[in-house]
Image (cartoon, rainbow, N blue to C red; front, side):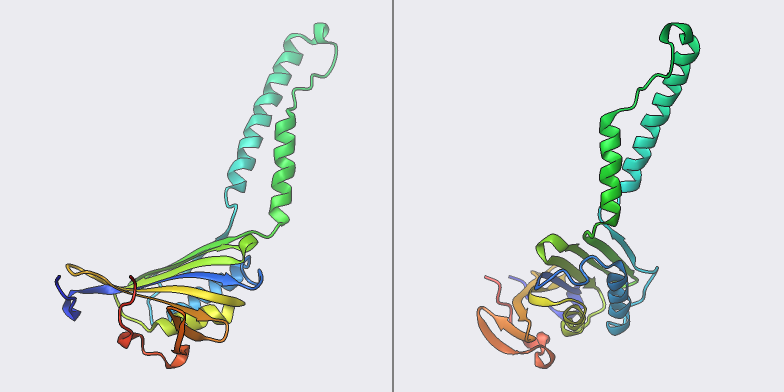
Length: 216
C-alpha cells in the first residue's frame, strides 16, 4: 500500500455528528451565520460569499404559491360559470377546496414554529456545512479545505455555540493517489478528547497531527 506523503495531500476533512443537551441555537439562523463567520476568521479561510443559512422547511413559499395558483384557477372557473349560467344557478358558486384551506393553515403554523437549520459557507479553499435537527438535539457538521487547519479551532467554536453533550468526530486526511488517513475520536462536554473509550487529553492540548490513524 502506497504511503501518503505531503505533496500528495488534497486536504483535511473534519466530519462531526453532534448530540446536544437541549435545542439551544439549533433553530437560530443568526447563530449559524455567526458560527460560519467565526470559522472563516479563526481558520483563516477566504469567504467567497456571505454564509448561506435557511430554516427548514424552506419550501413553504413554493407550497403557498401552488395553493395560490389552485385558488386563482377555481375563482376563474366560478366567474365563468356564474356568467354563463347565472339564471340556472341562481347565486354564488362555492368551489373552494378543503385540502387547500387545511394546507394554508398548516403553512401558517409552520411559519411560527421552530425548525432545523441548514447552512453552508463557501471558501476559496473549499467549504463548511451544517444541518441541525432540533427535535433530536442533533446536528451534523463538516469542514473540508485544501489549506490545512487545526481541528481544535473548529471544534472549539462548535462547543461554544451549542450545549454539546458529545461530538463524534472523524478527522480525514485526503490524498490524491494514496489511501486516506482516518482518525476517529470524541469530544465530551468537559472538552476531553476520547479515543476508543479512553481520555487521551484535553482538546486545547491535543496535537492532531501526531494522533495515529485508529479507524478499524
